[in-house]
Amino acid sequence: MEQKPVQGQEALAPPSVDIAQRYLDEADAVVHRRGRAVDGRALAWLQIASAAVTAAYLVALATAIRGHGGVTPQVFVFSFLVWGQLSTGMAQRSGMQLRLVWSRWPILLAGGALAVAVLVVFGFAVFDPGFPAIGVWIPAGLMLVGFGGYGAVQLARASGDPRPPRPTPKPLPRAMRWGTIGVGVVLGVMAMLGSAPDGVLASTLILLVMLMTFVWLVAARSEMGLPSVGASWRWPHLGAFAASACTLSLAVLVDGVPWLVGVFSGLMIIALFIAVSFVRGRDLRD
Image (tube, rainbow, N blue to C red):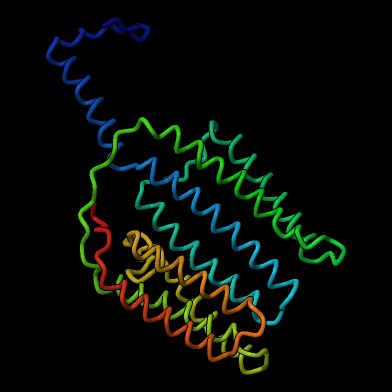
C-alpha cells in the first residue's frame, strides 16, 4: 500500500493485513448500504411513469382549452399538481437526491431545453387557431421520447444494481389513511364540478376546492401532506389514482354527459379511495 507523504512529514506506517481487509470490507458495506437506500429501478420506473402522466396531462389540458374552456382547464391543472406532490414523496422514498454537480449539468441543460420546446409547441397547439388539431399530440410525444427515454436509459443502467429488500406491507397510519381519502375527495369533487354546466356557482365552488387543495399543498411537510401520502402508497393505491384520473378526464371532457353521471363518477372515486385507504401500504421506516 504505497502513499505519497506530505512534504516535510514522514510517511505513515502501512496498515496491517487485518486493518487493510477491514477497510475493504467497510467499502463493500458502504456500497451495500447505498443499494438499500437508493432504489435505481424504482426511480427509473417513476421517471417513465411521470413522463407518461405528464404526456396524458398535456393532451387533456390542450383539448380542454381548445374545445371547452371555462373551469375545465383548472380541473386538470390542480389534478396534475396533486400528482406532482404524490410523485415527489415516491421519489424521496426511493432515495432520490437533488444534487447539482458538474457531471449532471449536461443532462439538466438538455432537460431544460426539451421542456422549453414542449412549452413552445404546446402554446402553438393551444392558442394558434390555425395549428392542426393533431398538434396537441406533439408535446406529449416529445415528453414521452425525451423524459420517458431518459427513464428507460436509467432503468437499463440500474439493471445490474443489487435489489433492495422487499418491504413488508403495513396498514396505513391514521394520518396517511385520511390523506388518501382526501385525495379521493379532491378528485371526486373535481369530477362533479368539472362536469357541471358552466356558471357562476360551478366556477365559485371549484375555485373554493382549488383554494383548499392549495392550502393542502402548502402543508406538504405535515403527516397528512401529499408527499408523505405518496411515499406510503403501493400499487393498489396507484391503480386507484390512475383509474380515478381516467374517470375524471372522461367526465370532464366528453360532451353531452349528464351532470348526474359526473356526480355518480365523483362519488365512485371517493368510494374507491375510501376502500383502498384500508389496503396495506409502505412502511416509511423501510
